[in-house]
Amino acid sequence: MSENTTVIERAVTTTDPALLSRYWIGAAGLGLFLSIGVGFLAALERLDLSTASIFDGADVIFQLWSAHRVGLVLLAVLPLILGLATAVVPRQVGASSLVFPRMAAAGFWVWLFGAAITVTGFAVDGGVGAPGATSQTQAVAITLVGIMMVLLGIGATTICVLTTVVAGRSSGMSLGDVPAFSWSMLVAGTMWMLTLPVLMGNLLLVYVDLRGRSAVRFGAEEAIWEQLSWAFTNPQVYLWALPLLGIVADIIPVSVKAKLNTNRMFGAICLLGFVGFGAYAQTYFDLGTPVRQEAFSVVAAFVAVLAMLMALGALAGSLRNGAKETDASSATPLVLAMLSLLLLLVGTVVGALNAVESLDLAGTSAIGAQMIFTLAAMLVGMVAGLSWWGDLVAGRATPQRPLLITGLLLTLGLGLVGVADLINGFNGLNDFTGAVLSEAGNSGSAVDTLNLIVVIGLGMALVGALNGMISGCQHLRSSEPAVANPWGGTTLEWSDNEGSA
Image 1 (tube, helix red, strand yellow):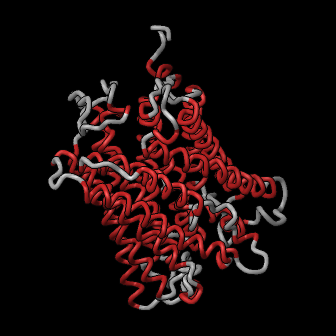
Image 2 (cartoon, rainbow, N blue to C red):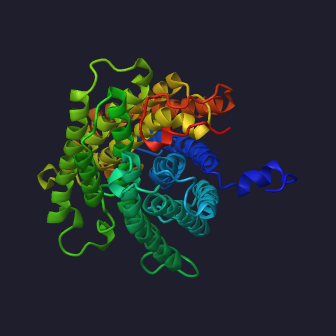
Image 3 (tube, rainbow, N blue to C red):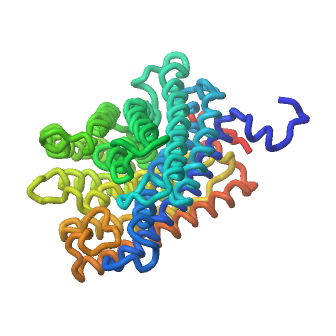
């Protein structure tokens, strides 16, 4: 590149995976803060189910509620995963960079512009429509375009990561030899590429019907969310959290200085990836028996628990055979990895409970609880991953205490939200309560108290996200050089860690 280029030109045209990784993670951190923030605002309104006392009607509340879910997945969790994978996966498989580096760079910028358009669409009374059908149609269309751009950017970068694992491995390394995180990205990315195009198809149907004339079917505002909601509920949410198993499988055995039962762990990742395929679970197209009551859906919900038990069994073997005392320096990633596993296990159990028809949890806040537990697991796992690979990402020594605080706040805060929403689900509280008491289901005093716990939990998570952003900025400004191999790892990413500023 010419020495006469400006800083902006170099930033926009770079294909350096470490730099792209920082872009992804930094932008996703802001997306996480905004997503939790709008969820906090929606939860404040839910404190009083008798009226819309803070915002102007159920439409605005619905936009906040749906923005919270869309943002958590598409503007926070997935870009965070891709940010970590962009820096770590090439090093783990012995590649000098991602395959198709220009495509990877383009994927980030398409995602970023799409994310900005999506946020703008929600902010100008658009979003993904509203039950009252009083949103601005043009703004809804803008939001749909933004989400489609987000999906294109995520898909492009995912293809680069997948191709790097499949075709960019160093000579002599088979797929069975790749580290656990790269394997989890291979499985998760493959499943993403089978489901994201379906979500894109849903969005195109909605957009075409919405534009140019009165909507006939797909673009009717009261029907839009139902066509998209499958991507933010059971079982699809398992695919968004799947790389967590790869992260913890790389952290725990090294931390306790023990071997991992690779076959069992890789099998658990594949099994959870298989049952996490959720493109079929679209309630809008139900014919006859509701799709969530079909035998396959019910069995898959319980198989997800089995997959988690398989993963825990593999990791328990490492913990049992490992050193009695671990190095204190690895305490932060190890503790956060264990907490993220616990959250994901709870998420799969709640998903199984939701599939039991006799419990009558369909459509209640227990659906949101399962999503929160699962995504919280991935977020805490990402903090553990950044604690573990932070030197590779930033090229500077990673301070552990701020990451530990962030992870603990996210665990406790989102854990409170999940528990309160689960109990409210058993109390009959609807997943979306609106601003009309009759639409909220059972709204007794116990529900009101639990809704307050949700607000407190989201407030704690919001503080955790803010702390993570601040500590991330401080990390990048640090002058302390990265340590070549701080954990004593034996996989390839630690063999050439000189850092990059």
